[in-house]
Length: 340
Image (cartoon, rainbow, N blue to C red; front, side, top):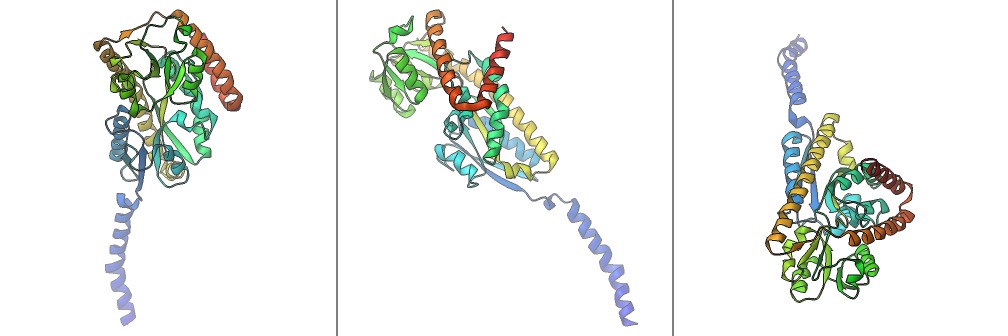
């Protein structure tokens, strides 16, 4: 009798309560485990690239906060720039933002956007990205990473202390170099290679330790290039991109709708970033002109010679890049030819 009464009390009072608690827990957002991802950036917080990345993170956190939260660590605070990609590969950090060409030592395909004189502006850069993205995404997948988006820096252009009409005019001048590509360009034009990092550049320019350099409009403004380098040539030597990525395991464990939403937000960040880059380039070129730097657009001989160098360096790159690089460049060149 007592046993039957005890079962009746349990059924009447506790079973409905237990069912209510289970239903409530299942419908609560807390039942989804939130994954927190720390993303390391090599760039300062006030860079347009980092601002765009932070906006992306804010949008992700606002729309996917129940399943994914991104925290941005700018200026190399979480990992040194050279360590961001390897640490993400090893799972020590959740993701990163780096300039893609710095990853060429891991795989040649990462250097495709820094082959000199291959693109002639943002339209070409976007075309090259369209045909190389799949190969770059696949390479990241091999390294346990998921590509989210890529945004270009302003084009790398030529600054000089004196007007150049042809490549031979640069013979014997001091050219700032900082990577294998710029060293090859210095060798090609017969200039003397001098090494300066960006942090040393303003002082080196003011003290006349260089006569020409290839860098962006942004760097030209930051280093007050106008103090000695009075000529600016928009040669579009190359248009390098930053890539943003997270651990593939993080992406793969997201619910399907969250993963799709993340990639839509990433595409929006990419589109926004390309527009910002073009806007920044125009603003910085205007600042150069305001500071009495002469913008030289009529340079047919100079461009022809540089483009011949670009063809030579493309062939050298293809020898190490393999089929992926060949396919990307062939599709890019074919599309570009058809759009003429």
